[in-house]
Length: 345
Image 1: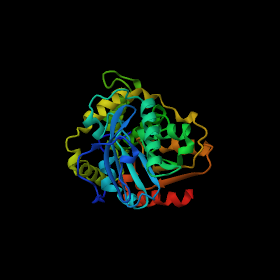
Image 2: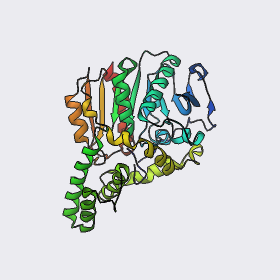
Image 3: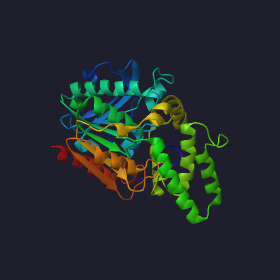
Image 4: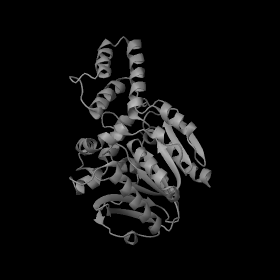
């Protein structure tokens, strides 16, 4: 779950980014061959959605990246921070229905549900496998996208060489209890009675403070950000702001509007998810977590991974990151991601 309230650092500009507007593509064969550079609107589940594919060779492994939010596209940040990935992967950034350039194309898409987004991801996976002649592709899910990613890996293990969960979500409600305990510890140490009183109201479910899971999560996020519990490196905020504004094709996107649209429809999926019920995945699993992430506390995901039955497992800690290691420590993140190829093989 990524939020505009304070996000994430450093710069690696994707010079190969194609500035042309997206054009519809109806078949996997419509995508280019050789050096891969594609920006297309592809019908998925009856709704045209934006898919950006970038790489130096179409023989490289394919990596499908599922963004967070919900409704918070990662495409500009992947261009800005993570272009090194395109040297070793064919990187596929997908703006889900109701998000990013998919939302700009269709501001009222039908069926914005977890089930439909998982179905869209499955359909996109089949297109990518056919287009790049791969038996399997790599799958990465970030924050909210990690709920979608686990669902795909659980249902269709034959499609994926590995699943990579970045700031993996397990159970948001349980995580909020851990987060609130951390905020309380910080506030007491600082003598911050205002935050402690607000936290008491939040824990009591005071409707005068917030109503509903998402609204109360945002209220908690504001308290958390006061103590650097989501973004460990304060310089990251400015870098992410630059990334969000760096590309003309996202200039018209209202990030908060896109988030609000998707969050209103997916709140039940976010707060109803309990991935602790998933005890087995038939693919190698890597979790990438920030040591200082108190937004989605990694205690839950590391515990889940330890108990998970999978062909292979790996937990990678980023010691100078909060919720967004892919932006807070981009060079280390890119190196770790590329290293996963050799680990899987």
